[in-house]
Image (cartoon, chains in turn red, green):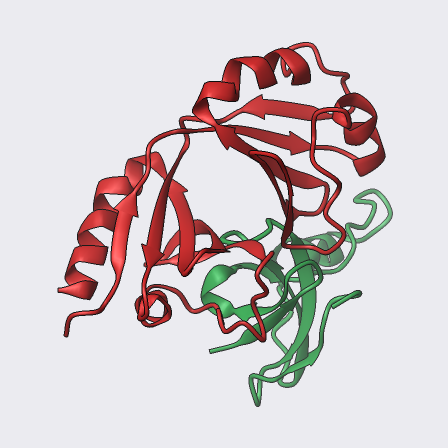
Length: 165
Length: 84
């Protein structure tokens, strides 16, 4: 069965992994980061910066790859205070978008998570499973976006091709 | 298949978790217990017919460790972790 979807694998994003007590992280980097997400597994946006609240005292900051150098200079991951952790992880994740009228059907094959809008709000973002792999999933315009470890990228391309063939 | 309540994420599919084993007794002072009690602590794991307290790791999720009470007769989660 074929599905009415457009699947795209994206290039690198600037990604920073932030850990620590929220007060300490925002004390260090609050001027750079978007507002602190209030709910677990939700995101906030500031310009081209996305901040994902994906675990207890754990966030991921995403930006266009062109901003990586400027963000690294602002966040100072190497010199940050010892009670927090900021790590540049841009090359660890590869992002996919699944967009189209049947995007939810493809995601239902790939993931056990309930992605219905009643359960998975527009600003939701969470780690779950995609084809049995740990993946970061969120909504995007007209469909869904997810990221898996770079090394699984080609595997996921193959899984998606078989799913939608 | 279990739907396990994660304190951070809410109810999630069992396949997102890794089983961390039953919650055992607290480690006794080896100098204050008999050899038999020490061997029992080291080798005997809880295996009741009924509710057992278990550790689970939300490995393909938020990374949280949690404990639940699962009834071995019905496979029902009879008590979730605090905050879930």
